[in-house]
Image 1 (cartoon, one colour):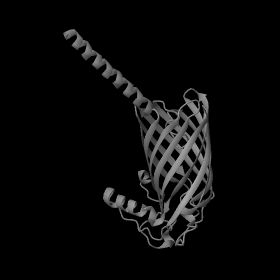
Image 2 (cartoon, helix red, strand yellow):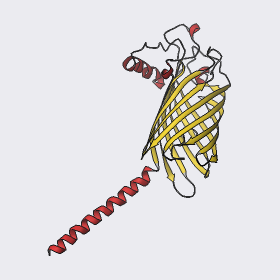
Image 3 (cartoon, one colour):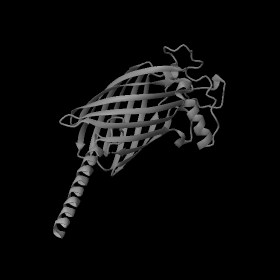
Image 4 (cartoon, one colour):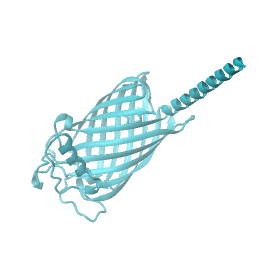
Length: 306
């Protein structure tokens, strides 16, 4: 009887261990199939507060189909903030960029076409003006976090509801087993923006610019280095023109530059379920009032894989 009890006890332990292993393996599979990401872009790293001043983005993505063809579903909640150089003034003559906020929800579906390329499409809808809450967010940050002067937010871009739709195609070429050349073309059509943009970049190791691909597409460990160029042709920019379907008229606007260029230099490091990214960005002027030829800001990104 004692031996029987011991055997029953051992069998229960074995079954428990077996089910635990199955659970861990199942969760490990899930862990390789989804992620949560936080991006923070800001020019405060260079002791400035102007033009494209800051952006905060929370993104989640997962594999929705795993077989010979992968599909990725991505949701992102984001807010972008734009300000003139002189944020203390209420006189429009001192402005070189309108105050503006853009808070949005973005949905993307990516479909792998081959092992080295994918096609994506999606939509983005959100709010501008006071509806975006960007002025409250920045004023809270200035007052409570960095103890800085409160911007006036005089004559900000009007309240409006916007919808953008977009599609893009991404592909990569392997130069060596660790070095890839990335290319992406993207078209945006909407009330907030109409644009065509491309990305050209070279990446060593772990993918750095997740906005070109996504964190699950190249999911290796350790270090990554990226150098890239992002030419844009912007045909409509509500953040500068204030022209849309809203009733409210913009009090201050600036003439948009059609051609813009962003230079990227970034590093990433992936360790277990965590990935950290830092990208330096150099951006040419968005409009004809900006006196500086370049605008410097950085992106800090943290991703956790489930």
